[in-house]
Amino acid sequence: MRICRVLGSVVATVKHPAYAGHKLLIVQQVDTDGGDLGSSFLAVDTVQAGPGDRVLVMSEGSGVRQILQQGDRVPIRSLIVGIVDQVTT
Amino acid sequence: MYLGRVIGTVVAERIAAGLEGVKLLLVQPVDDQLAVAGPIQVAADTTQAGPDDLVYLVGSREAALALDPFFVPVDAAIVGIVDQVYAPERR
Image (cartoon, rainbow over all chains, first blue to last red; front, side, top):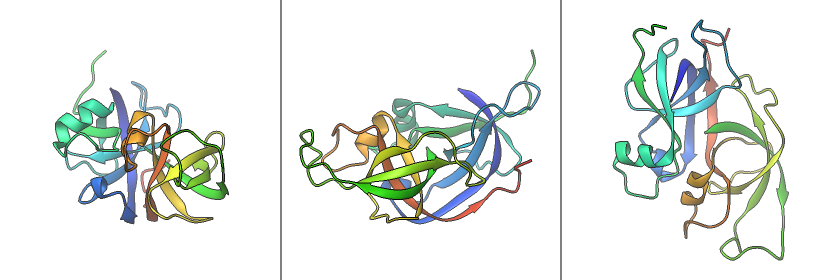
């Protein structure tokens, strides 16, 4: 899993039915000092995260299907599964 | 998942089983600032997207789950047409 910063959100009306009712956020992976790593990407939110939050993002389809419980044909790969309070190294 | 801009269409008459009739679009992946992010790719469309549309895509195995019938051989699928991108926390 990756630690990311929430940059904002994406709004879409026309979308695959599996995305209906889900909040889609723009996230940016960060290092332990808060610096950006790589390009931003999109993740479905399950924890009511918002812009500026540091979050835990899982990018693995089987785990997503376990959590969302929408059957076994869910074309969603990245999911925000936690809001990070503290990281110690 | 990631954002992309539709820049064209791809037609292939001879194609792998399961992909007959699937609309293939040429997509330029972009970041939250809509700047180019990586090489152009071909994606299967599930949303009736068209040229210049800003879309979001899902990659890897999950792309195959977006199509009906599912588990066709694709590794990128367009799963939404973007109305608005809001990124207040971009520094």
